[in-house]
Image 1 (cartoon, one colour):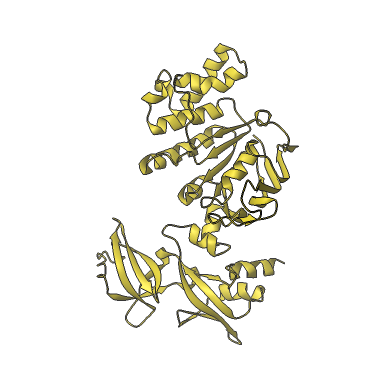
Image 2: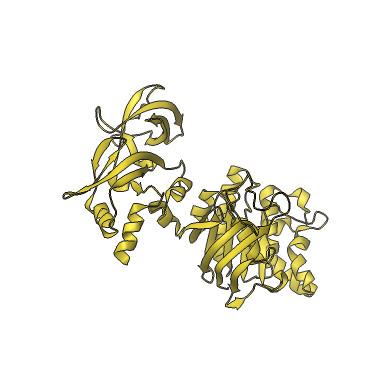
Length: 397
């Protein structure tokens, strides 16, 4: 029920000891005279009722950003607006937001209905109104039959639903969720992802969700914000960042198993652009050539990215030579781990081929040839940025 704007926000943690300005071995964050810069140049507009996911590895600044929105961390620089109102100096209780933490943080001595209704009790709402609202929330979350239980009598998933119920009971404008599923086992995480999607359809609230799990980001978010070392790397829909990663980091982070990377070279002459991949010459489709030409991309050493799903066993003498290290049977597909010129490479092959024949996994130590559709590869320059995205910007400009 509210838009959220983060304008050039920055968070610096002052030095607490040791030599001023000394880099910390455990982080790649920028170290300045002020301190450790955890978040910087963060700009994001979140529409009313949008579900935005901040995703990235541990230490990238995503939780710090969420806590600045919540008012639990002071904003060093920049501006935060909720529903068009500047919130930098507004107390957390006055921002009309709720937060679900990684730990359930339930009161063990209170029953489920008391835990859910606690925020309303703090607001001095009358008991009858509290009971009515708690019943409505319990119905949404499937907790009606557990209202008289205490947290110790609940499963992990039920506890998390109670924590979510406590957050939404007072109908906040913005719901913040900080890795709420990280303490659950894999099966329960899958179930709770579905529950959150259903919840989103039932309540009119803007969601900001933090996770390090790219599967959660891809399945939950209208848009995802990928972060690294305090900086935004890319913002887009899940499909956009999967199909058109802005740089090597995004390409390697989004997708399971991660994208394969090969050494290559971009060549250009009167006949247009072409590439070599691990020394093998390959023609580029016209669409890719046009994007490169639009950005006036120059010949250079490049990294070629290919997702495991898009590699396939090729005929004798064709494609890239790969030595098989391990094969993993995954039911409907086989993951073939191999080495191409010393680079770890993963190939995903369906166990049943198009003609109905079963795929026979190669033996360990066997050399196979790998091919791929060049239209589905990604080209990255020496700076790690996507050459095609650069070309696209050039065409747009």
